[in-house]
Every structure is written in C-alpha cells, then in structure tokens.
Image 1 (cartoon, rainbow, N blue to C red):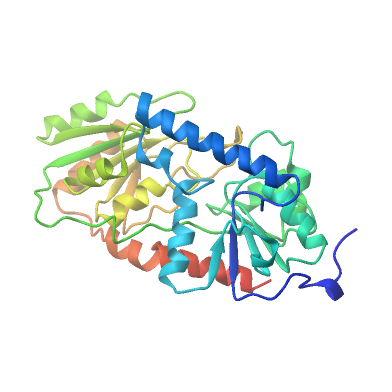
Image 2: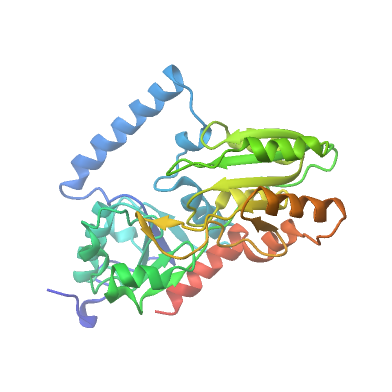
Length: 341
C-alpha cells in the first residue's frame, strides 16, 4: 500500500533539512543486524590497520563511497544547512532523504515513505551495481529522483525505463581546503595516474618514454596504493597529470588534481562501459578546456606535449573547480534537486 498525502509527516517535526543515509536506521530487526555489522566493521578496520596497512580512504568513517559521502556531509556543514547523517531514531529523520548506497537502507526508506515518515526520497549515485537484481527497487514509485555522477541519464533510462523522467545528473565535490597548490614547492614532476583496474590495459611505458625524452621527471601512481596525503603531496609537485582509466563515473581523483591547480591529460577510452555495458559516454565526463585535454594514443599525446611546451594552453583548473566542483557548490546543487520535487 503506497503512502497518501494525508499521512505525510507521521514522524515528529524536526529542524533537519536533509537526512543523508548509507545504512538502515537501527529499529526492529535492524537494531540487531546493524549492531553486528558495526562490530564486524570495527574488527575489520583494526585488522586491516594492524596486519595489512591500507590507504586511509579504505579506513574512512564515511560509509558508502567515502569521497561522495564526505563531500555531501562536509558541504552541508560548510553551508550551515541543518542535516543529519545516518540518524539512529525515526523521529530524527528529515522529510527529505537521500540514500547514497545500500539496498537494505533503500528498502527501509521506501517503507518509511509508504508509512508517511518521508516526503521526498532521492537515491544514488552509488547504489546501483551491474547485477540487475534490484532494478525493481530503484524503479519504485516512492523514489522521486535517481541521481547519477555523470550525465548518463539516457543510459540509465535504457536500463530502467521508468526512471527516464526521474534521473538527474549530479557530481560530488572536493575539499578545496585540503586539496590546494603548495606555492613553496617546486613543480618538477609529471604524474602518471593509473587506474586501469578493469579490462584490457594500455601500456604506460611508451608515454613515460616520450616524457623522459623531453626531459620530464616522471612519477607513476597506481590506484589504491597511496594515502590521500601521498596523492596531495605528489600533486603539489606536479606540472601536470597524465591519467589512464578505462571507466570513470565521475573522476573524483581528477577533480582533486584540479583543486591542486594541476591540469590533466586523460587517455580517452573509446569504449567505456557501465555495469559491463557500453554506454557511449566518457571516462572523464567533467574534463573541460579549463582543466585539461584528452588524447587517444601516443602520437596524439605527443602533439599535446608539443603544445604544452609552447605554452599553448590556458588552463585554470583550480578556478574551475572552485566555481563548479567545491563541496559547497555540489551540496547546494543536491539541495536544489531535492527542493524541485
């Protein structure tokens, strides 16, 4: 039975403008399961840090996709917007809810909306996987908006036609106070950032060879092998970054480079996929003339380098990031989507 407007706001009124959800509220059976999951996460975190040190982002306190959740939470804080993150009781649930990840959490919020506890329900952008087993849940009439990292709503509509009029592109932001250029450091590197963790890989060696023959000092960073501090440090020493990734829903690592005022040359994958399906999009959907350029092969890359050596670009990556992809701007964009319902 679906909710009726007459039973809206069944919960007590509160001052929260938005509730950000990645886990179910621990009520009913969830009070047991969520307690067990929290304990297991704590044990896993301690085990990872003690036996097999891992990058800090894997130990983040933010659930779901840590960078996305962090951006929303800190963006709302910077805007002084009253909100809460994973409230523990129903009465603290806002009339407007965004479920960032977790099918169990989404099913619970759908039920709460049917019962009149929620007025607006947004989901995404890290909630869909390639299995297809939960697409009926995403298509529920209680879902008001499905948000995606990149402008791929036509593709989402192919997968779930009923979302065609409810799909909205939205990008997570970056923390400009953490990601910043260090002016006292000498920029003496070219960073090659490699995130080819799926599919056939492109050899980095020809590109490193081209760079070294032109006198550049090259540093290679493999995805998942660094802390955020490591990444920031090498960015602050880099003239520009060369990125290799087969599929990228947004490219937050690229935005972090832009925030450090580092332009990016991105290898353009001609066949990016999402959930194993070619969608005709870009593996760097937010790359612009202000933040960098793309290349298809070594010859194309060599031409970009020649233009760079002639000062033929007018990149302003940090300015673009400040105007388009800060935590505050992206949090405000999310609120605008919610308020449009």
